[in-house]
Image 1 (spheres, one colour):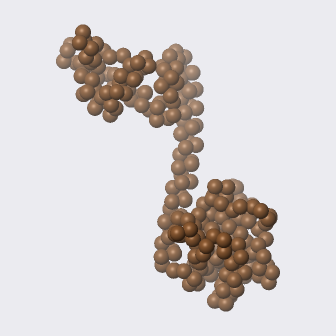
Image 2: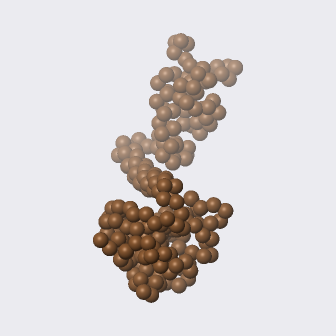
Image 3: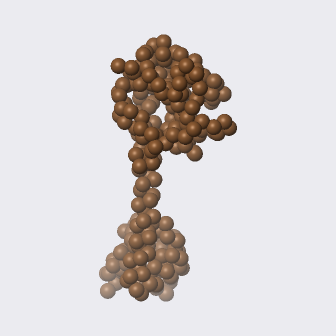
Length: 245
């Protein structure tokens, strides 16, 4: 029978946990050694690996050790299934959030590549897919930032002659949008400036773009969490408008 016993260190390696973790599980009543020798040495059996794996899984799902113990104490399979269902919902929410983070990282990487290729203050033409925006009327005193507006946000100028900000926007999923930015060819350029200069630069940027390309309203001023590509406190803004073809 002793041949079936596994020393604490070896068992910990099999379970990919530390020996300290095994002692904590034991203290919490989650894992009982198969044998405890008179000298205090603890031994486990191979089938207990599954028990540790379950503890680790529930921990990774966000359960405290107390909650893990409560789960093991449930005798009703329906109750266990209900608990696991809640954990699954939590995982799905986390996966959705990670998906958004991944999309943001991919977007930032693409923006940096575009900026490297295009350079600053150089008008380029890009073919853009249809995008969904959540737009709202311009309001004084509103701070546009990635925390409240997401990674892609900015302002819209609807009247070229007035060159005044008329709306705020942020890029969203289709189901969340109330405005469609049409697909097509857009003239655009990137400009680096101090944050304090952004608000007053719009009319100059519009005039510059119109001097380089024949475009139609609206005029987009997009801040894409530009601290990702800016430096020393500067920000990089992307200006664009659809070509009049």
